[in-house]
Image 1 (cartoon, one colour):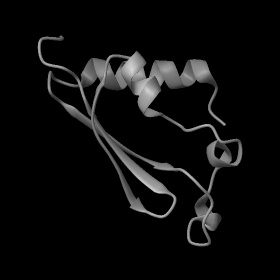
Image 2 (image 1 turned 135 degrees about the horizontal axis):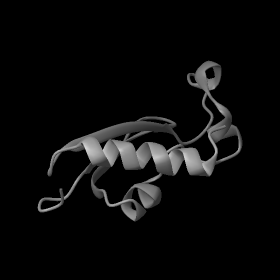
Image 3 (image 1 turned 45 degrees about the vertical axis):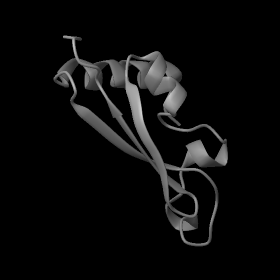
Image 4 (image 1 turned 30 degrees about the vertical axis):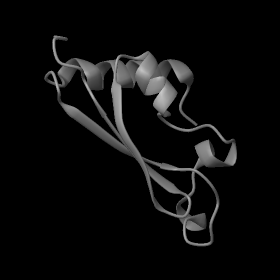
Amino acid sequence: MIPFGSKIKTLSEIYRVLKPEGRYITAEFTKFTPKNLLITHNSLIHKISLFSPDLLEKNGFRILERMEIARGVMVISAEKPMGVV
């Protein structure tokens, strides 16, 4: 499992290198299913998302879309807002 401080540091670096309106897209496992059972990691087992929408927003990202693309898999699209360098 990734320590919380490392998550913040990683998001800060992603945010830093994005141009204004640059997009960041991530996929999260949201629940166990027979199809994702073999590739599930600690964050799902402990019900802690890697980069949740709340965590993205708290670190300056604007959530554009959340979409469940399959049972147990959600894609989150976020951007660095315009006017932010």
